[in-house]
Length: 265
Image 1 (cartoon, rainbow, N blue to C red):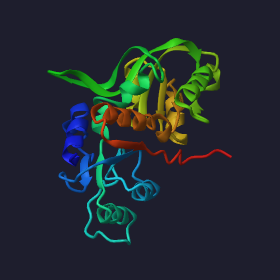
Image 2: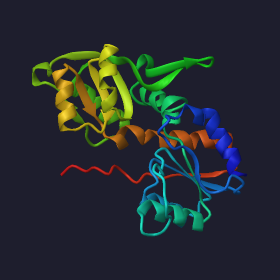
Image 3: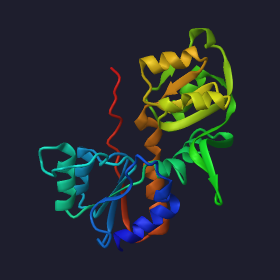
């Protein structure tokens, strides 16, 4: 099977034209006519992921986060990203990324809000647009299975996403408050906080929060649960792998999880 056939399947799910203008998606390394028998799906094209792809002798690596964002004047072993490009090319591994296009349509937000994870009711996109194919957009907001305090939602998120920890930004005076709705934006959602508040949500689940944005959110009366960038987006690996298995029974497809880069001591 050709790499181009797998690309076509992925782009029916999440067309590349739905990616953000700053993003870099699609076939980033390799040839479209490459013969593919074995595929690895991962969240990041880290050095460990690329090393494992070489060890497993895969023909194609697919990740959510693109390995290449900025331009290059040189491709050599002196730069970590260049080194990975060389390694993939030398081992004839085609490399494909589906990032904000997958966030926007066909995948991430809908998956996180769906029955396997948050199990939200009446969920709708948070940051949305519409075209002749309907409404699409990043993140989801909807009703929790039952009203819960923020601490109870934290335990619920840990259980549903199989996470060892989450971080909670909440004014102590609101500790007993129950929430029936939640907004979720997998990945890094700091810049969308004001839009989430404008839509009427008081509880927000996302990743990559930090001290000052967390305080800002609390001062706005918002409660934020940070489940880490990895914690909410690792779910895409099994989803994409299953999508390929359902479309290409003859492909050998493996999932690779390098684990959360953050550990608590």
